[in-house]
Length: 165
Ligand code: ADP
Image 1 (spheres, rainbow, N blue to C red):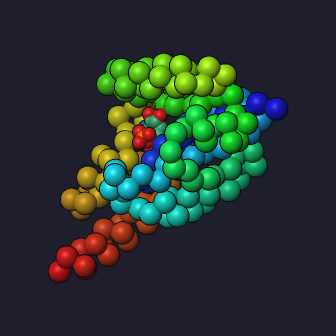
Image 2 (cartoon, protein in one colour):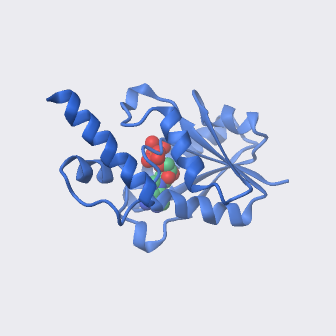
């Protein structure tokens, strides 16, 4: 059985992430999305909220599963018996970092390979951080996210603004 892990912050999951998830699910028997629990990145959503959002958008994909993890991606891959780590490549700016990460991982875990999927053109500019910046400034984010995720982002900023007042 072919198993891939797709690690990331998913803060929150965008249509760009979803495109990579769909395409991976079509070529692998099982896809385990790993939501990184990394407080250092100061995420907008808790890891539980990010997992729940991914579950809601992938509920109709039977071979996709969501877990959260801490620590090394390769340990997460080994735990799930995955031979492949999937990453999305948007532009040249992603390339250097992703190449370094993939090569380092291959030294410490030679049995696991990284596979890159080139982003679909229409999502090549899209990132969670850009979406958050637009939302925090009151902009429209519905082109970038599933409707229920966009609603969650707006709700989160409304709550944060209440706290600040
Ligand atoms: P990380 O903190 O690991 O960069 P992200 O949630 O930002 O986590 O991204 C997870 C993965 O999804 C990365 O491989 C990233 O390149 C990819 N990705 C993010 N946005 C897009 C997009 N719009 N199209 C394709 N891949 C994307």
